[in-house]
Amino acid sequence: MNSFWVSTLEQSFIFGIMVLGVYITYKVLDFPDLSVDGSFPLGASITAFCLTRGIDPFLASFLALIGGALSGAITGFIHVKLKISNLLSGILVMTGLYSINLKIMGKANIPLFNEKTIFSNGIPPIFVVLIAALLVKIMLDFFLDTKAGFVLKATGDNPQLITSLGIDTGKMKIMGLMISNGFVAFSGSILSQYQKFSDVGMGTGMVVMGLASIIIGESLFKRVSFIKGTTFALIGAILYRICISLVLRIGLPPTDLKLVTAIMVVVFLGLNNKAIGLKLDGKRTLPVRGEANA
Image 1 (cartoon, rainbow, N blue to C red):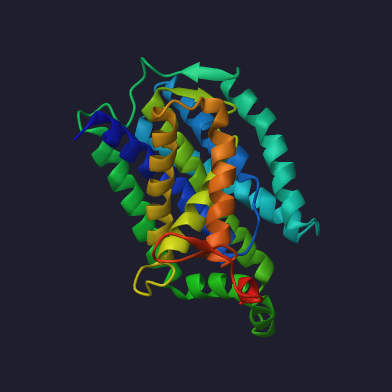
Image 2 (image 1 turned 120 degrees about the horizontal axis):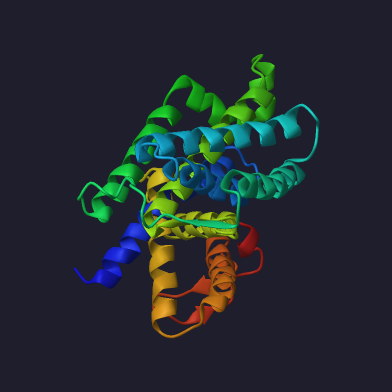
């Protein structure tokens, strides 16, 4: 297989783990969690700190997951206990994590070229990241099918019903945020080991990337009832990375990637909301009055 496609798939599976984390807050909890941009580099920072001190890379990845879960708990605490809006809670934690990540690493970036990582066992990286992404997806699917998972989904869909049943929606939100940010930090941990360095700014735009992947997957597969939401989130992550890689390959500068991502999100949201009409012959049509809100 061409190295271009192998590299693209490897990055897709790594970012796919992050997308699964964003899926929990965006689709399950209906919680716009911007702390993702801070918890992603938090996982990389913890991993870099551990690896440079000789700690086993698998243990370092697990500690990164725990660190991300704690950051999610803080976001939930600020929102639930201090009654601060969900959007502002995420922004506050994201801002605070920037300084925390700097303190963990001691500087803005740490090279890991001479450190042992989860990719140092001779197994091709694509199999390592594929197994990691599938394990996260399977665990998330299993959890969402449990009683706690159903309650978590109901918390996002109908919080009044959950409250009437005597269940604390605040605790459910905190639990969901912990799981979400734990996966996000785990993804950051794997990426830092994959690219052999950790940088305090590597989380910029992660939440937008995650939302773009979910929207792409949902727009293309929402009518396929037998596909789980986590599956179309992963497929969306793969399609998103393919689009970005192709954009880079045709010569667009990396500085244009944010603009490309924004355009992709707008287009797929328009398709998803039927604000953009498409015929089978490829000609664009205007939607019927009221169709966009159907």
